Image 1 (tube, rainbow, N blue to C red):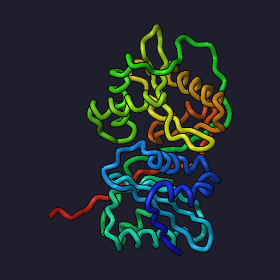
Image 2: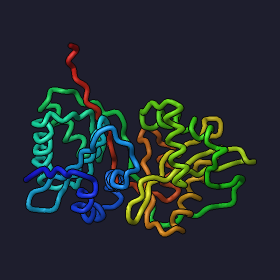
Image 3: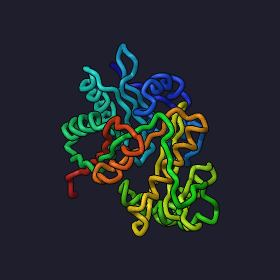
Length: 289
């Protein structure tokens, strides 16, 4: 059993993309990030970490990290998982590699956090629990007041503010308005932002992200509090899904906060199917010195 360290995203994908494609939805977060790194869509402050863990069989664990952010993990449940995670933890610990946290499927993050705590004495804290859903065919849309359209430059100030609020509420990430505007501008330049409007007023947002070979992620689904409960987000996401399937994508996927039963219910009602749970775990040292 060994941990393979790749020097660049091109090498990582060349050796692992066929395996990642076998479970395209489950692996889409890590896979999509690796593609963006390969295509130089990120300005990274330091080189990324790209690993696979394998024995005689194909890899069952893949790790990607853009320091100083947490590890992003994809994994396949198997009888050797415990030994594979032990090998991974040992590799990271021996090299004194900073591990601020881990983001991935719950079965993996629970095991990794337990072994990392035992190895390092650092406390693991589960920050976020998300549920992964996917859709395999275009949903029905009904007649409704409002209009679905791509975002424009005129929408940028409002969308930037919404991204800032969404990031704090949904993923526990505090952004300055300048950072939120940079995200909005980048996504707009890539034609990834979409809105639902009522009488030309923005009332809901949805975006696309991290396309892989056959599918694409939907994120930044947000409706301001004063417009919630009126079905605007549902209309926006339904129309966006139809657009994506018409472009030839074979699946759409998204994450929903497990602490928000309303959004989970709405996504299932739209036709999204549950696949697995994902957690974000952060590691906090108890050393007060």
